[in-house]
Image 1 (cartoon, helix red, strand yellow):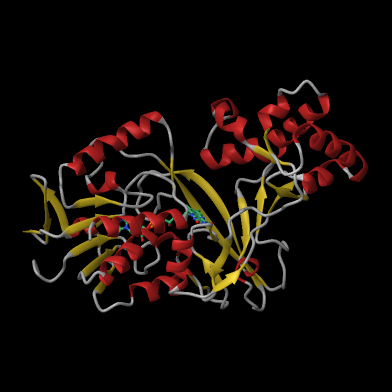
Image 2 (cartoon, helix red, strand yellow; image 1 turned 120 degrees about the horizontal axis):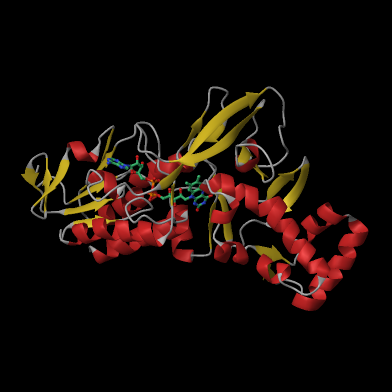
Length: 382
Ligand SMILES: Cc1cc2nc3c(=O)[nH]c(=O)nc-3n(C[C@H](O)[C@H](O)[C@H](O)COP(=O)(O)OP(=O)(O)OC[C@H]3O[C@@H](n4cnc5c(N)ncnc54)[C@H](O)[C@@H]3O)c2cc1C
């Protein structure tokens, strides 16, 4: 075994597949251990029993302005060009989010919105983004009113559901930065490249790991095969001298010895309807009511032509580590970063053990940043 592989990678998500491919192209022999029975991590998509391509772990849209990342991924897929627009359901009315001049019209009606728009443009200028705190603290009563509208109808309840917080626990510094866009652009992202892989994310990652130097083993929990002893990595009981790249939750790998890193988890409830359209939008955020945060209608994400329609409702809650639960969002605060730092310090004692990815680094990354970081690690290990 010692000589069979140069690198062992734990996890076949965005991070694991990308670094595997880059290292394989350098001539290294790679073993990927993935505990699930599929690759692609959180980006995994598959057809449901009605033939609809669904994103099993939540809707994913690729967006980037990084040329190197776009070029790399484009080697493994063509793209369905898709520009993501999100609406909020505010007491039954759909309004574009983030809040912009279209939302202003939806909220206040043509005539009143025109007056308010003139004021916003005159004070801040067309094309600017204004934090809601600036509006809420402005001396002008109309601007205060807009700031308060966004806070009450778009922001506060959604944030409470997403992060499991009471209004008084919501960080005012974060709230302050929520922007109002003084423009008529409904696009959720502003990146140069936006879309989803034409045949799905899973197909793209399958193409990526299709390389003579890469072996993927599914259904393999890393802890059953890898362990650390005296700052050395053992694979199946024998010292492994190659590099180990770990992309899973680092606290769980060390049996949460310093404590469990807190995460939010999500429960996706899928429903199929025998009608062509459910909500007319890819994603609708529920910002003033319901226990779920959003509903995704998959045909609008992927452009697929299919009879009927499949949606998912997304329910957030605290991650407990219970079997079957998935850690989704790390919770950024000082206490949690201090806890993560203990695991990181432990890993830094192991010269051939590298942390990569949203779980291993306890950090939210978009797909493009993840790909770029994985490419950088492969260069570092060259
Ligand atoms: C709900 C949601 C929506 C998102 N939407 C977008 C979006 O629209 N656009 C965007 O750019 N980004 C989006 N992201 C971010 C995106 O999901 C991440 O950037 C990406 O998944 C990170 O890849 P990763 O490889 O670090 O983690 P993952 O995709 O989670 O992969 C980690 C892999 O490691 C495996 N693993 C973990 N522990 C072990 C172990 N002990 N042994 C073996 N295998 C193990 C897991 O099973 C998993 O397959 C979203 C994230 C979430 C949570």
